[in-house]
Length: 413
Ligand SMILES: Cc1ncc(COP(=O)(O)O)c(C=O)c1O
Image 1 (cartoon, rainbow, N blue to C red):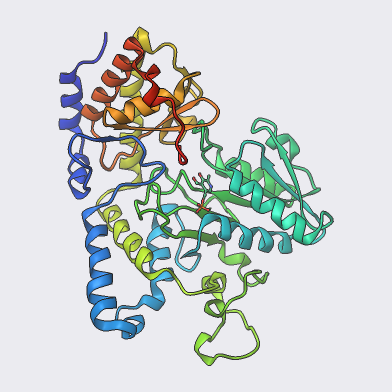
Image 2: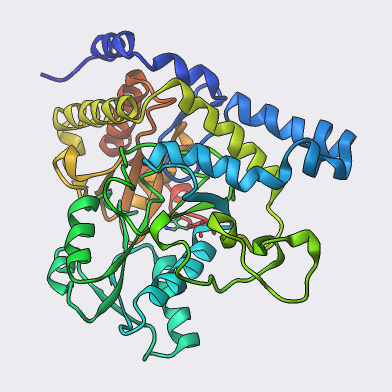
């Protein structure tokens, strides 16, 4: 039996975190199924942007480095994120982008395994992860860094004593398929391999226990489920036990043990500040820092519980709508094996997505033929899901997506 709008309302009424959507400013009438790509602005993030520009920068000028603790933002913001990934203090710092951070920690991870050179990764990893490894390979030479990629089902077979570093993304950016971090990390460690996890699509939406799972290094993103704003800084997790065993390659003054001594020789800071290179982006980091406060009011368990319920509701509606059969699920069937997204292939996925956007349901498209729907539980309701499926059904039934205005590709898809 197809769920009805009344069913959606009933689920919304029972949703114990439904009130959190009031902390976001989603434009009236829009349904945002793209929080997995760029989280929306929260009221506290918007206030932080005004506060840091008008009051701190505006009134207090350079004294804000001390007065408003700008200098400690990378650590303070990192510690807020640490609570979301199961990390004890002193192991996480907010800085740079995932790409830059991966460059730093991949180099560090290779130093921990100096007799080996192979970096093993999944062939459909997010491209930046592969580009960074290819770049290091070019700089260091294949005898020190050599990228090997394979299918995600073959990764565990390839864990041999030749591999120095296993570099994996926890949630596949297209399909949403997840790895079991604990199991894969244990298998890699049994072969002496150092493991780096890219948590871009995990942090803020999936339960993580990096310390307990003995993860070596991780990186993650500030602008997706953490709602830090476009280009918000990313983060690095480095397990305590490794922190004195490498030198990170992007040496800069902010990673020096005493930046304001202006000494001519580089001496790295201890702990996580060694990962800093240049001046932190204070405005965007302040916005991210404030956006993280919403997690004081909700547990990751509650978020995950609602994400699964939203995806199940979507699936029930889809299954009862034969006109949607053309959309082929490429995400794992079981919610336990996927992150907070559903992905469908369709030859006209791009136009369908554009047509949806024109009807105020914002999803995204990933080449070659994937319609990707993100389920961010902090601001989505079951009624939003009901309306999204209604619009999708109408688009596929009427074939309205074939109109010319929906087929032209834009620069950012
Ligand atoms: C899995 C994954 N890693 C890395 C990135 C890129 O991160 P950044 O832009 O911070 O370098 C993305 C962006 O979507 C991603 O999905």
